Length: 167
Image (cartoon, rainbow, N blue to C red; front, side, top):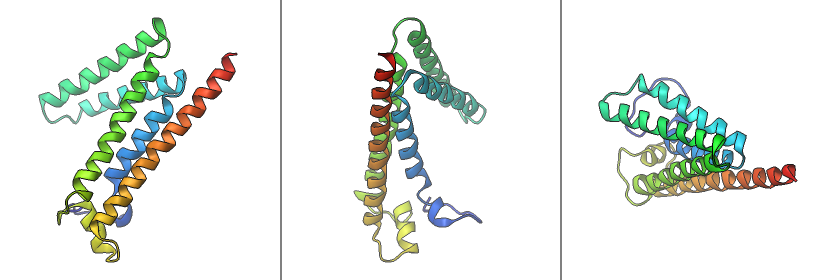
């Protein structure tokens, strides 16, 4: 980020990685919610990632949060496959929407509504003097909204394709 120190790499790609990464993964979860199999893959990947994160959890609260989300997602998978068909798609859509919304609100809070010298937008401004920090924040927000819109588009395409395959 803006106050991070690093060696190597491409600085313009590293600085916005957190904001762009959250937007990308939110869009991916929304896109994968369009079908049963993709939603199952997304939920399984999510559970695996949470279990991997348990190894690096610094405190008990994060351990309990990881375990809780893993159990909730596994429960949703079981409900979907044995009781109610589109349930995991709803859960994956919920995760993707919340991840994307968090990314957009984080961008708004950190880069558009206020400008702090240590922010990522200010670090981009120091690289390119032509773009003010708030302008950089608006660019991050537009990118995050585009990721969510693309995720919604691909989810709807998947839903339409799934409906035609069932007929």
